[in-house]
Amino acid sequence: EEAREEGSSLKKNTLELCRKMKNVPNIVTELRNLQERDANRNVMNFLITLKDMQELTLKRLTTTVEEERSRSELLEHYKNREAEASKRKQQLEKDLASLKSACERAQSQRDEILTKLKADLADVKDTKAERMTDLRNKYEKRMKDHEAVFAAKEEELLRKIGALKEANKKAKATNDDEEAQLKQRARRYEMDVDTVIKHYDETLKGMAMEVGEKMEAYKKEQKQRNELDDHFKKVQKERDTILAEDMIADVRLAKRQAELDRKNEASALVQAFWRGILAREQYSALKRAKKKKGGKKKK
Image (cartoon, rainbow, N blue to C red; front, top):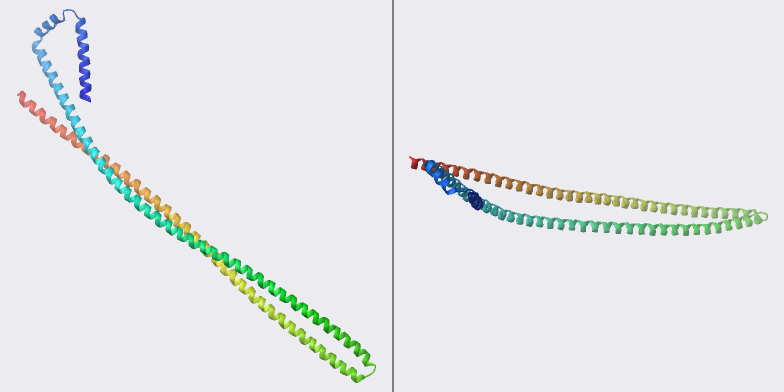
């Protein structure tokens, strides 16, 4: 490209010189006189100019060839590096895909386990609530039945006691023995009432103890539910920790890839710079060798 530019510039300058020579009259005579006066000096100037032009042309041609060679080597190096980088990228993408698939499988398994545990907890809660409701209704109904039976028995016994008292009052006027017998009978009935009352009290105590045992069982189940809640919270925290570790691993991988790209670019720059230095040293040695050859020829 530089040779073409020089050629076009030389043609342009030649045409400009010809146009200017046409405008000058007697140019041929003046040139002949100038040539006769300064023939030797003009020849020397021409030879010096020709030598400079040769050196300049050789320099540009040599520089162009070296640059083309350096560019071709640099291009080949970049192509090799691009192929290696592509292989490395494919391998990393494959590893990343396998890692992602493994993480997704583990995450799906953990989600299934968590869903199953939540379902079990919901079933336990529903079953517990139904059992407590059934027990409460059952014992309330039983307590109402016992209260109704006790009230009926109490009413019946009170009615009997009242009747006995009336009979006792009537019989007391007629017969002391009958009165004593009636008193004894009344005492016996009173003892029966006391027995029934004691039996009712013992029954109520047993029911109260049974209710207490059910309440303790309910408290134990409540404690187990709280333990399950704590376990689910720990599982959730572990899941969050695993997600954070996965994010950190991705960031570290991206950082490592960026560091590798930076080192590759730096090594390519250093190699290109070193090739440029070697090319300039070779060109300087070639130039010095040509100058030595040219000096020997002059001698």
